[in-house]
Length: 270
Ligand SMILES: [Zn+2]
Ligand SMILES: [Zn+2]
Image 1: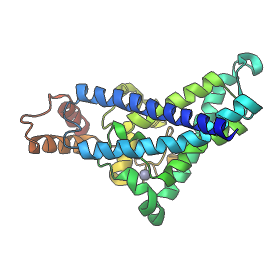
Image 2: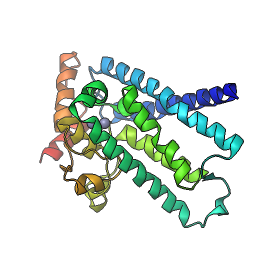
Image 3: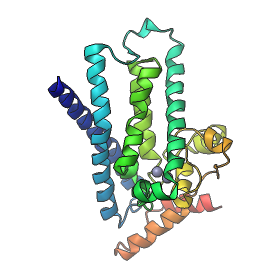
Image 4: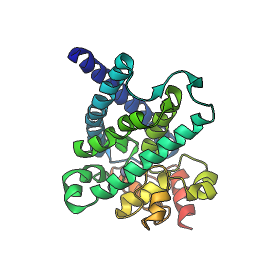
């Protein structure tokens, strides 16, 4: 039994780790294409981000592995695989419930991690990325990784969810974790500057958290930030992109970025 649980935890660690490498790798590649020099001079930082993230994968894999084993062998959790076990309308509702619950958990644990002692002990690892890159998605100290790793495993015992809806929640979690740290907006302007952007968190919002610290704590939604007065609006990539220009020049890269990031930065300043 112990061996089966261990194997399950190992398999989950591998899945989380490989998923991280593929998704962060894909968006890091997209960054190279879109803003070729944005991560110039950040090689050492990115190596640290990858190392912390892979360590976090093991911490995420353990509870996930135990629960996957219990679900398969003992019917633990409220995950269901028969689509009609619950009404179809419940499928999207369950996705929203999970995202909101996860966001709530993240917001309050994140605020807790900004208390000076906890920040120094744990959360400073995540903020050591200045500016963060697509590889920073899981760059957490183990204490922070534990708070992240238990959220979904606890929810599957409380809120029923179809296995495909859970897959969507995990996909949203992974993609937003990466894109929020990427240093540019992958979503169309209409999403983050339109009415939806008033409530949804994308890179522009989280960028401000990484620049100013004491604000914009949320994960998916701006609801808690707005309710608690910690929402300072959307951030600006101008500074990060200007720093990238300087790093690129210092590294002897010559002329400016092929333009797009500079144009975007200029537009956002205006
Ligand atoms: Zn962050
Ligand atoms: Zn923080």
